[in-house]
Image (cartoon, rainbow, N blue to C red):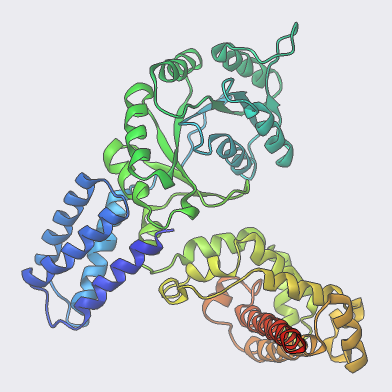
Length: 482
């Protein structure tokens, strides 16, 4: 997300890096490029106009610190103004006592509302709550079935109603919403997540229905679910809904699929309502709290170490991390431990997503190939090893390598390369563990080792490259024989 905008911003900052001081002339040139970049990112015109005005005034009046270049000064100013534009931080859900707390989701059809309901339920479960999903979208075919499937995936009950006489879906959304509250009270649910109907376009019938449901059940919080990929259309729909429903916040979905990100920069300024959460993937665990300062850092290519560490802490158990640290110090870190780390990396979004959150890495990755299929190929090699070979890779001789290669469907050289790289990384980990592990490794408390993972990824890329060369040679050989 924001890849295009990040690239344009970095280009502007580089153009100022060689200047001796900030002047009205070079700020004017820089802001012309910034304005163009924001408009291309589908940011609302009025938001762009005000943002550029605020940045210009702050830059011209800024005291330039001797140790900072004009480009660095502008980075700080733009970062602060972006944070103000998207802020403040307000991702907290306010719960009532006694419950249940009623959270109502509204939005246009196709915005990802039903999936977001399940994501929100999983988010609540992780924080000790017992949510009830309510299938109150009675207009879209298969909407109820979709929510039931998602509820089964996260082990959460879904409340729905069917006509006793015909077995067909009822047409009264207000009745379903009211009955779901009684069901939640009788069965100990402390939060209700209400999934309402959407439309392809905003129309009076739709707005009347969601308004009637809101009036009938008086939800404690109403969140509008917006598809970030629709850009200014998402902002316009948010404005319309806010006038009828008195929204408490916005959830932006599909932000991982939008390289522009205009909706994230516009919706707060236009509606005055905070962005509560962002959807960054299709799976039910891909819902993140929205932090304007962290998002500003991602937009400017400065990374987001805080979110990266939080994700790591969710995946790495403290006790397991301590055991791994001891194994590193002793040099007994084995392939089984490495497998656990690879699986955790996949749960965190993959290697490329992790590296993008590291300061200075996002702009350098570009189109670099980080195919997570490489992790699967390495897993195949490790799974072809015996338990003894995984624990102690030094016992893997030439005959064992041939057997492992045959089991994994790769070349013997691929197995040899992975074992050699892993052994070298393990020795390096042992040496580093003799002192203090610095940088990112210390943040993960020994639970994640970037050196071993990057070395293995490098080995995996070599495996992939050799496979490509082999296929090319075979094709050339076939052409010659013809």
